[in-house]
Length: 390
Image 1 (spheres, rainbow, N blue to C red):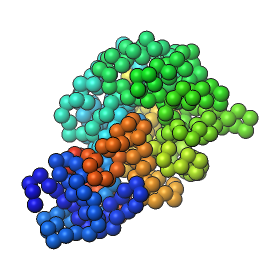
Image 2 (tube, rainbow, N blue to C red):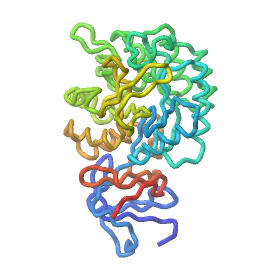
Image 3 (cartoon, one colour):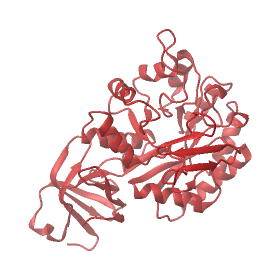
Image 4 (cartoon, helix red, strand yellow):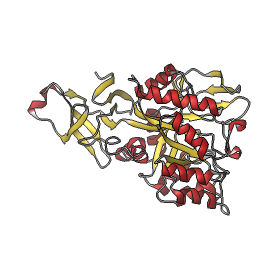
């Protein structure tokens, strides 16, 4: 066997179209060379996965931090903590996500993220940055601090893009705010994904944003005008539109399992992507934490809220847990699950030629799961970055 060739055998390979029992994956120079069924005599040196599931590496387009590290920080150590935590749980790629803060500080954060994203890391690959805020609605602010929220502005957006060294890949926008539609149009011209969210838009206002080219929906149902029988709101607009993608946070807290099943029934398996919306407190102990804006946070189990309220402030999810909850909350099959956790996200940001599924020619980002869907090993570009196989 060539030195640069790694073969995995006796694998339950999950592809977008099928599940290959007793599958074999050949990996060469960081890419998948071949996926086939059944071993050959020359596979004697292959890694035997004992029928474990092999999924494509998870892709999380909405993650603020984890493991004590935050992406709303100028410190590279914070970024590394978050990336390392999520890679351990199978997220091989992500969009590092920021939230509303003082604008000048946000520029500094984006500049720092651009540098750390290009620095060799033991953590998840960063495809770019998702800015959630400040161009959102004060009526649907969620945990975003109202005094720091801004109207839509192409000039300010240009400053953020420049600060990020052109690494902003997605921006959450409320289409109904002053300048919101102009901002969406500007983002589309820059080939940046406009994601509708934190919005109190009417159905008509949301539909205008979709018509301009908004491609995604930020944590669908949360912090957006709801579906009503006389005013469909933003929820009605995104459910009514065939092409727009919908994020879903599956911690059992942000949305009810029934609501998730309704979302899948309407949008189908090709237009929903699971995200964590994880904060730096994901993986941390329960307790009270202080936010940079002076407000307190309470973490109790999987729930994180602004102190003194029931306002959710992100999650403590990782993508492995989101995957398991998806199987618990719905009747998706394994192939569909691989779309919800990887391929659909890759399509949203246009990297699906190289990432998002287990196919010949694609980058060898893989997650090995046991029969209970717990991650046991993670591979990034053909190299084991976590290996607890026995």
